[in-house]
Structure formats: structure tokens, C-alpha cells
Image (cartoon, rainbow, N blue to C red; front, side, top):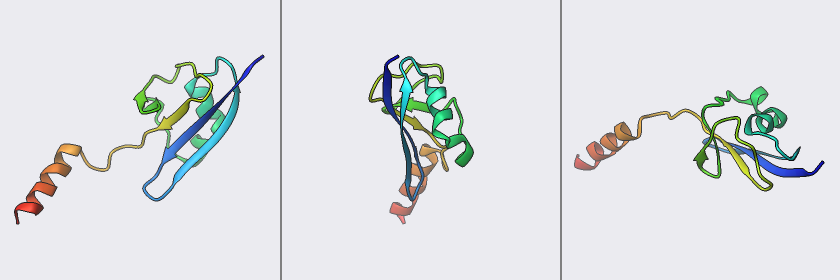
Length: 91
């Protein structure tokens, strides 16, 4: 059976945690995350994952060379963050 190479990435504020994997052809995003061991090191929300910046469901099949990205929760709503920046600039 053919194998594919994928990378699973979780970006933290200070560092990027990345793991390169070789998986069987037809592997899914959730299988790649399980094989990476990220669930043991980080809180993983399978509804907040993507491939090359595009959100996908966990049952999505991977292609050779894909980069699976695990998205972390936002610290602050982007609209609120813009309001705070605009308020500081006015002062």
C-alpha cells in the first residue's frame, strides 16, 4: 500500500510544534492528529482544524504533502481587539 507524507502543526505564541508523518494513503485528518501525539501535549478541538489555512472536517482524506493545522481558540474577539487598538490611537 502506498504511503503519504504529511505534517501536523500547532502554533503557540512562542513556538511552533510540528510533526512530520508517513501515513497510509487514504488517511484522514483525525488519523493524522492521533498519530502525531498532539492530543497528549495540547488541547485539540477536532472542529478547529484545517489543511493549508482552509478549515476542513476531521474526516477529510489527506493527500501527499498536506499540512494539517490545529487552530487554538482566540484569546480576544478580533472586533474587540480592533476597538481597543483604535481607542489607544485616539488618546
